[in-house]
Length: 303
Image (cartoon, rainbow, N blue to C red; front, side, top):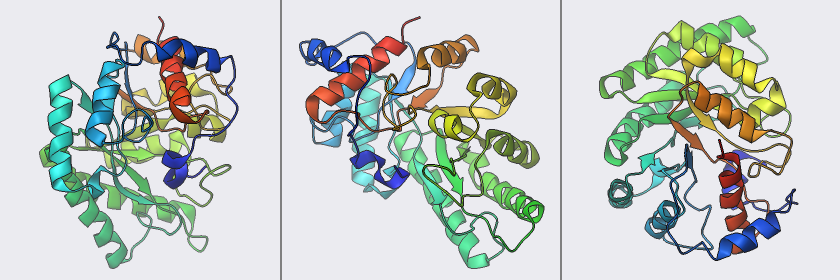
């Protein structure tokens, strides 16, 4: 399932009896629940069987105890809608997670020396700074494009470092943080330059800016390299943000092989109080599937 398709997804088998969980949750769907212990962030669109309008969706999320949201496509929304979203988040005391600043999946962008390609990336980042101010976001996602098979890898790495320095310099005055996302090449994104956490760690260390950090997407890294908790520990000082999805299937926790309860406990134990973006599909369709997602996070959130 590709990133550009995941918001429209939501099929698959759900393990461990989530149909029963969803049924049990139905009676609680209209009652305001206790806040989650961690800042899990649904995407706008994840609960659209319960509410269609983005503002109503935020109200529903808040009532279910969520303390943050994500919206990959926030930069594309009209400023008036961005203002409404910010006002609604403020009203509920919720936090804005990441949105996509610039993302390349096939052709080289940050590994490129083409002025036109780079200017497009930097223009999107400049625009993202203004969007972040409007919606109260602290982080925005960068997927630094594909790689060339005609240039030595280390030359491309050096080019990416220099281009990321320029991008970070755009963000530093406002405090906005570019978070670099490594994408798995085996299931979703073959051909991307950035695929592993050690590679992202190297880039962030080389850039040396508080505005260039790691987005650790647990789903992608389970596929690419596994060893999740040790890699989280090794890269900890450069990680600014997490995203979630179980594997296989890229659906809610409890539908795949990742022990999310232990992973969340480990992250919490290290003192993380940031946002964890729910960048995944729903394993069941309809309202029942949306309630199953909520109950899956209730289960994982237990201390």
